[in-house]
Image 1 (cartoon, rainbow, N blue to C red):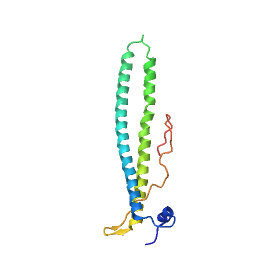
Image 2 (cartoon, one colour):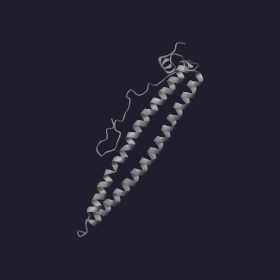
Image 3 (cartoon, one colour):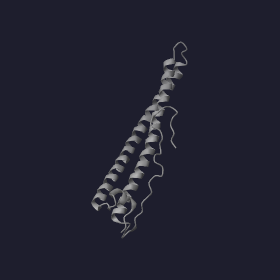
Image 4 (cartoon, one colour):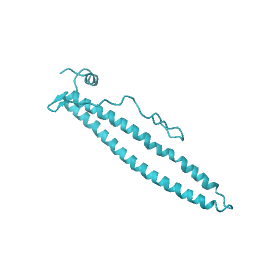
Length: 155
């Protein structure tokens, strides 16, 4: 069977040994599974943060309404707290960015693992031709590397 370009590039012209290919494929799949677990952790943290954020906002709004009936009390600190809380929503946007990056990386890892399996074990078996989904076309779906209010570019 002729050697593919990835095989030649990875091994300096020699085909990748089957055991090494299987080991590399396993490592890629473990990394992909770790990213899946990370995604679940981020989802849970984001849900918890969101629920606390909305509860705190509701409490502060109720307090502001109550204080508006008492004109002698200064509400400045409470308005500042509301602005600070509104600024915290930027941190929730981190979840969107992280989710895109994790999905992108998972797709790339799975594509690499599938290609290694196909190249090392052959393209055909008793079940038919091996199907390898192409990896992502773009190198990175998220261009942001810091979190500032108003600086999120999701697509």
